[in-house]
Image 1: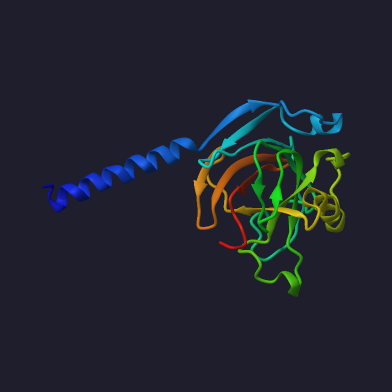
Image 2 (image 1 turned 90 degrees about the vertical axis):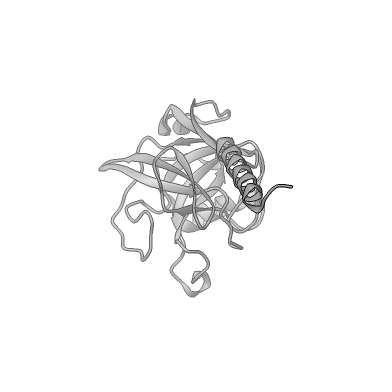
Length: 213
């Protein structure tokens, strides 16, 4: 009959093995631009090499980021990316499986444009998220001029076509080492550094964040 210490040792080994398997299942790799149906303005706006992000639930997302992000000076309490221009084009993403957005809405497989926005500073949005920074997903066919920033109302209108209801919102979180996946209190975060006119901006995209967490 095994002793208590041996049982605990075997349990600890099992936990380590399961954790290792889970970590191994999550990975980031570089890929060439391969999304179909992109307009010439979008092809010229994004980098040739992107990222394939695989999570341990089997979902995969391919990202291609802007060659240069639009920046602006603003003061927004708690903003993770205070130098980014609201309404600016950030990236395109191809989802290979359903993705649940921050509101719990389903974003279907397909290719989308991502634009940066901040929660409106009003009473209706007070306390709805730990950070005010979000990416709004837009059907890629709706994206005609990625160089031009858009007002919030226009981005929300375009993004609502993804779900048929409210805009499709993906939360941002504190960024880690660029090109990696990390686990935070909010969820699994994909971190990347994207060029700006002044250098680069680190962005942490929370692929599993939801308002219920």
